[in-house]
Length: 320
Image 1 (cartoon, rainbow, N blue to C red):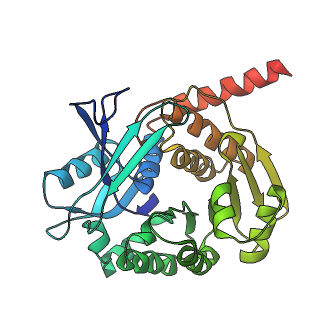
Image 2 (cartoon, rainbow, N blue to C red):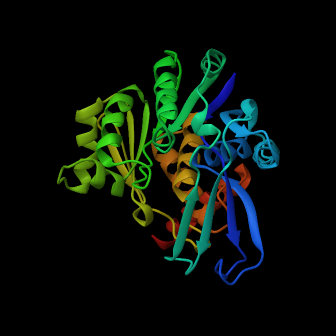
């Protein structure tokens, strides 16, 4: 049995030397990243068995991505190496550590966006305790959109589906995204949504404390709803239980991947059978740790995460 299976695109990430722009730098760092891969890498390091469904071009860039995933323990049994398409690339330029960032995507006609899922892929999904998907993937192509729908409708009765809305305005408009969400969210068991994304996608002027109840009325009360609020932390609603958890302050090195790190920490707690309050705190702690390191992946081991959270909670107790 696999703990978590995800489906998504991996891209090559290119970043200039630290504290330099692309114009000034003659040396670039090459890594890989992608929202679903970020979560799987984080969960693998935390000790869970993970598998990734994706497609890479059959060239050295594709193999770079493949071997990086394997290095962190992510299963690649259903990763296809194909002659069609190309590797998606994105360029990241970091300016001031708390604000400035420039991202340029070059991912059109990637191998991933051109590859339909087959029956073996869908049957493989039945091996997972939990399936994790995001709203980035269905925005990449009609093929990807249909693939995500197939996965959601293929989910077994005893499987859980986690869905992170993760809306990207550059990839599709809000009307398309909202229509898709209305099809998919009813099938999800855990929903992650940023406060900013709610304000864009849902044309409702609602007080922050009412957002989760609004979603619950819209999509049903049997789901776990998590509203992430950046530096303000998060709010969680399940049935009639609602609470908020404050974020932890940190020395910010890089914000990219912080949302994926929160999801990683929350799912870590959830899969361990911990309370929703503990899972939310683990999510906040993982996001805080991730922002203190460079790169997309939340490459934090279990001992470091637990020790960090314990130390933060001890500090809070002393302050009281």
